[in-house]
Image (cartoon, rainbow, N blue to C red; front, side):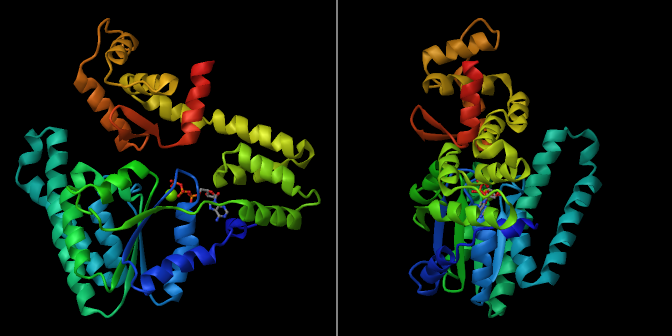
Length: 371
Ligand SMILES: Nc1ncnc2c1ncn2[C@@H]1O[C@H](COP(=O)(O)OP(=O)(O)OP(=O)(O)O)[C@@H](O)[C@H]1O
Ligand SMILES: [Mg+2]
């Protein structure tokens, strides 16, 4: 059975987004929902095909997958869609830049970090000029574009601010032919991105919650189960499981897999298995182990009593956790919080208030600290 077979299509939601673009009501929109709720699947499997059927050239870029160089990734995706030849030009331009630095003899005496910065600056310049090239190629064409920028919160990072300004300026004057759909899992960052006057995309897109999957999704899945097994799942069992799994489509799909492969354990057995798996997920374990001790200490404090990381108490506790015997300095906290937000683990809600982006990870951590 193919994976697609289990996809629950949402044509009406896709048409709703498309409709607002077509009517000229908006040329940019932003949607957000927590992790694993089905944003990417909707964008790729429902929205983009619908946009293409409607005559748009659709471009998809996931900035999280390319977070070390989102600018280049975005420009590359753009070029690939409108002018494949322009794309090979991009590759040509990128290579000489590395050569140039090598030839300058800088490499031998250069610390790795310095070299990296140098390369990054170089790439940024190139991304900026390639963006202009791409827009010029676009201006000469007569296509209309829908650009889907997934994990758009990456654009709000300080290191991408120049590119974000350039991108916004380029898109601003082409609103009639380039529509943009931003998506992301960090509501707080997206709110800042579109709501704070100093941000490049201030007031640029209407931000709204992504319509979450609900009962009709569960019903459709129950029907699919009935079509492939002699052990149909009751709707009541399925709805109960969906709730227990925090109405998270990804976990619900795992539950269905478990149910189908172990029908004799029954619906409750599958649910118990899935829950224990979600909460003891090996990947959380690995993610946790890979973190720096200061980051772990901060997360533990926040999960335990939503403590202000900069509070006097917190700084002392973190000092103890690190074996320092004294309170840590503000910049230790600051650096840790920056790392955690760069990895979209934590988001700052307001002063002294932080939220876990991934509810499943937060849950896992809660269980960890209780045992
Ligand atoms: N429409 C759907 N039909 C069936 N299953 C779905 C659907 N949407 C999501 N799922 C299930 O949920 C999983 C997670 O979905 P997806 O990757 O789209 O979430 P996301 O919101 O983009 O998460 P993240 O923020 O982590 O990127 C999918 O791999 C799939 O198993
Ligand atoms: Mg996604």
